[in-house]
Length: 460
Figure 1 (cartoon, rainbow, N blue to C red):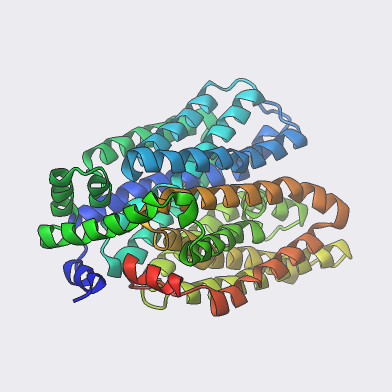
Figure 2 (figure 1 turned 45 degrees about the vertical axis):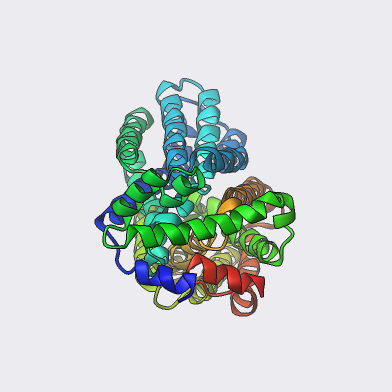
């Protein structure tokens, strides 16, 4: 029996402890969703005539992009911490950095405090992608790994729903106090959980590793599973001895890096930050009257949560590549429709039938983004890197995602002023189509495969 077969035999069920671990990661991602939806209800309020913190359009643009900019150092910090203290402890540090951002908003009496808060929230968001996929990737059974990581990722969509509702109907200080309280409760939950067996074996703490196996895989044979984990760690330690830099040159790792760079760029190609942040502004600027813009933003985030549920049900059945293709097709159509609406609106065409076009486009965008472009990159990130290079993979993913998102979010307003909304949306529609040939011809399918099997595929 091969090691991969042995691990498949050991890992057959999802224990209650794995569900608890997933819930902890889910709560972390709820926070990132709240952060990402913060701008849509708050920017119009900050720029209004009766704002308690007067904010110019340029300052609002920085409030939008600072979260993505903060993700760059956040990814670096998160990757270093994952390697030093493990993914679970890094999740705790991530939550604490997010708590600091909410505290800054509570104390805010000028836009400078908000700048600091948004930058800190970006650091925490960048750190999150360098820890939770690896944490769940190491405690989940191979057959359900994609499901559990996608479920945790779904916290982002739920957080956006919560954030939009709370931020719309409560003041910033009260809502930030509620978010801060949730941060502290999440920390308490994560403190109860043990580190992963992989982390303990890497630290040569075999007794704790055995206890971790018993906690996360209560029905498996602890000794058999520990032996397989030891073999996996020893194999990677041999590569570490040759130096991480030489390991980065191997065919498998080079392929993994290329896949992650591409996958991490997908949200920026879809212009997700601008769509989420300026959704209410789109509707008002497009003179949409058939629905109130504020409630529609809430409906849209609920649709996004439905998309995550669909991804959760499908990702370990139809695979990662299929969802990526489906998402790309839907986003392309949505952005084409959205661009067409603004093009016709600029030409003077108005009417209820055209207003339904922009409503349909934004709804389709929210649904299809949540089905593939959001959950697939984080799922694959937790699957394709060997143990000793996971922190580097998380760092690469976070830096690429944060850099591309900060560029597209900051450039959006400038591009609109030069060429108009229609051509900006059509450009991003064209960029979204690039994911289709990538998923069909380049990206390998990782559904249901163990770490060892995935590494063998990448090494071919």
